[in-house]
Structures are given as structure tokens and as C-alpha cells.
Amino acid sequence: MRIIVRSAVFGISLAAIAGLVPAFASAATVEGTLVAISGTSLPAVLTVQSGTTTYTVNVTSSTQLVRKFNAPSSLEEFAIGDLLTIEGTVTGTTVDPTTKIKNLSIQRKGSLFWGTILSIDATNKTFMLDPKHRKSLPDQTVLTTASTKFFQGNRQGDFDDLAVGMNVRVVGLWRKSLSKITADRVLIKLTEINGSVGAIDCTAKTMSVVTNKGKESEKTWVIKLTDETVIRDKHLDIITCADIMVDHRVHVRGLKTGDLMMNALQIWDKGVNKVRRIWKGEISSIDGTAMTFVIQQKKGENRMVVKTSETIIVNKDGVAIAFSDLAVGDEVQIWGTLSGTTITANLIFDKDQP
View: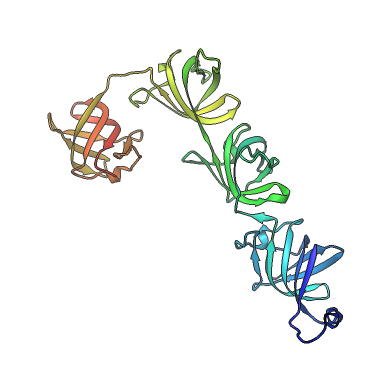
């Protein structure tokens, strides 16, 4: 703990200045531990312990509040036990006016963590995180609030989506000394595996997938199918659990819930190879309301193309785009099924969209 007193008095001895300090206000920097706070609304009063001295710190709307690396802060971020550096005018044991307070215990710089969820407290909306990418750090307590945003890949979720064993990324306000993170965002990292179906039970909505089959590194994953699981065949057609067979090669993408356990979001069964057709042509007209367009084929009749909620649309680089990005004159390829002269599209590939 330290107190540095800076005096604006010139032409007198240090001894004389020292004799004046108790009687007169002096510009000073006080470093100490926050032991009490009157509230988070301004004006507020902080009680700070510096060595054997207890200081009363008056905080007003003109006081500059910052974090460890000088990013703006607020009293809502302060907590008992935080280490503070206070600049202001000291009279006895009172700091008033207070010009600047730096909270050395909180920071956002370096507060991105990858790790595995060790335990969950559903009542208090907190969880314990093993920060695997920072092996020198202890386990961190992650606190969530009403403003914390949760994501599963590109889907927005909530606290109830978390499970022990999941790999997550946490971004927020870090109290390094307390090993606590108040999360702004929690991203549930999706896990992807390739393997062969070892068993499938559509009634129980479970399947096993063997990766590196026949090798020393062979592993068997337990996959749970949910109402959100989307299953597609080799050509991206929607299929059902009943179409999946033992020994089919599959690609599974989902949320890891434990060691070799996953809730599947998408399953791509490469062993289901339905008869498909591909159409090529130029878009001649678009109906944005009906979500349809007409292609003029170089060989063959014009076809009406229908987009459904399951249709995937990508640009020339394979990046997903919206139906509204399609334009008359664009050269496209459509994978889908034909009924009469109408194509129900599973995949639309627009060669002219960047």
C-alpha cells in the first residue's frame, strides 16, 4: 500500500511541507483496497483501506473511473476487495475532490477465455470454467446476467443450453485477483466429427459413431438426436432417422455434452444417395414475395424454382447468402427435385454473386 503526496508549494523545506500536510489539503495518490461502497449511483462514498489508514473517498459525476488498462468504468463494476488507485485532494483521511479512480482488479483486455465447463449453478446462473488455453490460471467462475448473450454456433441460445463438458468461449469483465468473469457473451463451441454409424435407435433418438475405425485411435461417440437435429443425405436432401443405417459414413456437427458425447444439430449421412438432378441456367425473373424465380436453360425448357425454409443459397465462394441477393441475369446451378415444370430447390449456387 502506498500514499504519494504531491504538493504545489515551492520555496520551503521538505520538513516544512511535511508539517503542513496534516493541516492543509494536498494533491495525492492513494492506493488501497475497497472495503465499503455506499451505492452505485452518484454521488457515492467509498471506504478504502491503505495500510493501517482508512480513507473516505467522495465520488462525483466529475470523477473519472477507469479499469486497469484505462478503459472507462463505472461503480456498477466495482466490488468489495478491489484494489484501487485514487487521485485527488487529501485532507486528513478524506479524498475530496476525487479526480480519478483506477480499479486495478478489473479488466477487459485479455478477458477472452476458451475452456470446458466443469460445473453449473443453475440457481445463480454461474458456471465453473477450466481455461485450458491458459494453463497457468486457476479455474474461473463465470457469472452471467440478464444482458449476457449466448450463442450456439450462429444460433442465439440461453443459459439453459449449457451443459457440463461443453467447450465454450467467454468474453467479459475479468476480475483476475478473484478468478471471476462477468460474461458479456458465451459462445458454445460446436464439435464436428466424421465416422461410421455403429448403432442407431430412432425410438430412443440415439446413435453411436465410430471415428478412426479399425485404428489404435478408434473412438466411439454417443450422439443424441433432438427436435432441432437436421438430417441430410449425400446431396443435402432432408431425410429422417429411419434412413440412417449401420456402417453409413456420417458427418455430425453439434454440442459436446461430455467426454465423447454430443447433442447433434446436423447430421450428414453420406451413405444415403437419393436420385438427384442438377439444373443450370440464367435467372430470367424473380418473385421476392413468393420466393420463386425462373431460370432460362441453355438446353431445355424454362423452369420455375421454389425456395423452401430448408433451401441453402451460396455465392461463388460457397458462402451463404440471402434470397434477396439473387439478381436477374445471374448464372445459377440448382440441386433439387422436379415436379412437373417446378423445381423444389435444396441448394442454389449463384456463380455471379461475390
